[in-house]
Length: 377
Image (cartoon, rainbow, N blue to C red; front, side, top):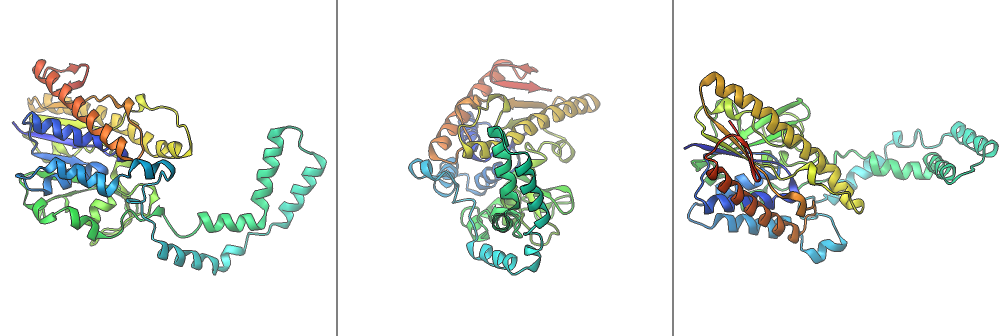
């Protein structure tokens, strides 16, 4: 029996994947290939870099709790993941100074003709409703030279993201033993999107792979670089700027049939579902949802498209490879980076996967969509 598992992107709901691996271990289900995206790459790489005779899941959970997620009491009034999205204050100051001393910063600050038109319009067509007042205030701010300068310095400094995503490679090497990862008998893939070359790239724990580059701390960081939150990363020995591959393939499945011809099962752990999201209650929830909601829909599209390809592959090659999509109860989770959400995610992932395994066994792997699992072959 040869199995692959796809661990999707989905940041703050990573507990789902830890809980899923816990259920698989309990049921003695092993995987030969791990195909990962974004935060799933951290799980796949860390898990397979640890020695098999250690409590690997305990170490993975401890890593995320201590190094990634924030204590609830701290997060309550400071809902920012300062552990992961670290601002490089010195570099930011240097870039700000460059912007301040750049003459081009001041060329369009004062717009006398626009100010005159604004005053004339205000006098001849004064506001009558609250919406009119809001419009005039907004337009007045857009033309105010001081506010224009402030906005220019906030939004147009030469940065591609708010923070640096733990910029030191030493952080990765502290927790992930790449020597052990490359010696593992498991194949681990991660993806990253090259923004400069406009192409998806896959990295693998193999130094002489015929198709893909060897993974590294740089590649892991690049594949986790959330747009807007983090600056676009570079990878040593590669050209271009990267962001996380999850923006294109949240569940990295496409390459599996090309690279392996002897799978029996491919299990999918996606850690979000757009059908179970709730309206945001405040600005931080809206911001987190704005990042996560596209992943929710992309992951579903990835699975649907791959399932169609798999069925065609099975027909042409007289195979019976099964795609096992684990269906979770995501509704109890949110997108906050606090300990309680991590713990809840682990519980949901464990129980959801355990239920899926039981139903898979109960139905003998027969195709169909059941309560906690969808089987496609």
